[in-house]
Length: 113
Length: 117
Image 1 (cartoon, chains in turn purple, cyan):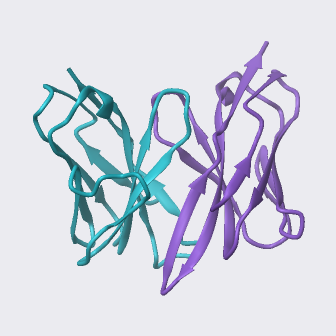
Image 2 (tube, rainbow over the protein chains, first blue to last red):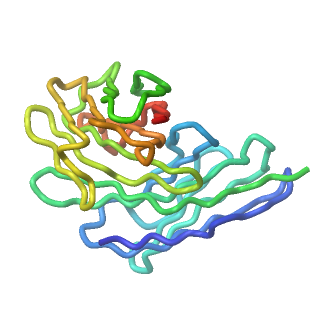
């Protein structure tokens, strides 16, 4: 199976920077995704890493270290609307063209004024 | 970006009845679609992987006779909850993988909130 760990909750101040960590253990690693999910809504795609390093996308950046089984999502210039759950998901290649995405339990981020 | 629709967005049904949920990829073909279930304050749990034209693959603990999946075309998959019970009340989310465009990400539908009374 796959073990994906991320903090349950975090709180940060509007305008600040927050880093959400994710560690994982898997075989057949084929990429790590970060999704944002507001309460009662479906997840929306934020970022994708398959090679080591940092991927930057506006206020959001994601980092991956495959050797350490570690990723983080960095949110800059926090806004109130960033209050949501952030899901780390690991994709595994199971062979014969079959991929599977497994989600962590999510980190609920609360942005306060 | 790619769009996945789900219908209905919410449904209330009586215990013992069946409910069908549709998932459509609107602007891309999806050979693979996934069905997830999410209980309050919990993460998404994969129920089954559906491949067009073949039987779905169910995760451990998911009853295939209770959760019927049909993926009859490259743009449509359906999930039927048969003989629904109150414990089946949950948020059901489908996603479709765009296998034609790297990084082959999964796009999620808006979800269907099922309440069984």
